Length: 138
Image (cartoon, one colour):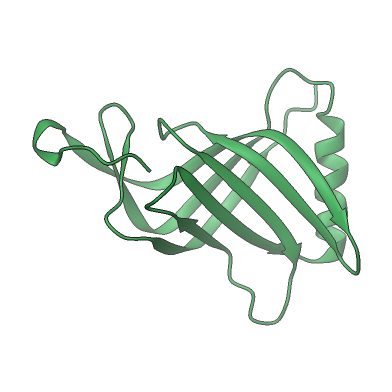
């Protein structure tokens, strides 16, 4: 993520990351996996890869923020039935001009300045407390 001089900027904390989905892929070998390439709605630069996996016993939804590149990685876990349902809902949006959005409520705050640039000192691995999808279908 972009590093900026803290003295010339007004910083605020955010505890929600909003993503706009650019494209989706389904990988299927033993289990089905959904991959989404996203841009940020409330952070100025970078991109985010969202990976939806089959839920295991100790699965924790997480957001990893890199310091050395403008990239975040999200891992969320659903049951196979929920993944199938999500794929069906995303399919309903395929010819729609409105983008699917994902709202992630995170465990710790991130710092952004008035231009939306993110300040990250060290790599962060944050727990996602809650998330929801906004999928326009008409």
